[in-house]
Length: 128
Image 1 (tube, rainbow, N blue to C red):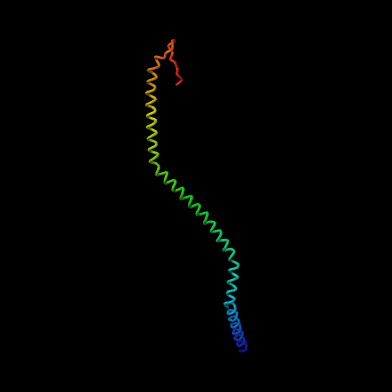
Image 2 (tube, rainbow, N blue to C red; image 1 turned 180 degrees about the horizontal axis):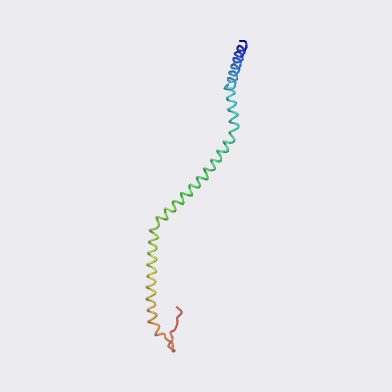
């Protein structure tokens, strides 16, 4: 019986001691101290993360601007296909006119060439 009483008393003492330790460990001043300690340890790392994120944001903004500019350039190029078709038509027309002018000049030279014959019956080359 004495043994059970002793165990009961030991249990009460340990329970009271545990409760006292729990109260002391969770006292507001200790909690604030631990919070301050945590902030002091983790703040430099958080500041470093913040500066890294700001740097990445700046780089991302630059890349986004570049991509948007490239997209607008591609869109304007696709919208300019009408102008390129118009230029193509004008170039074809100019080539056709040049060939017509070249053909009429060639006929004129042929009509003038027999009158420019040398005494040996050879044609005089004008270098053109």
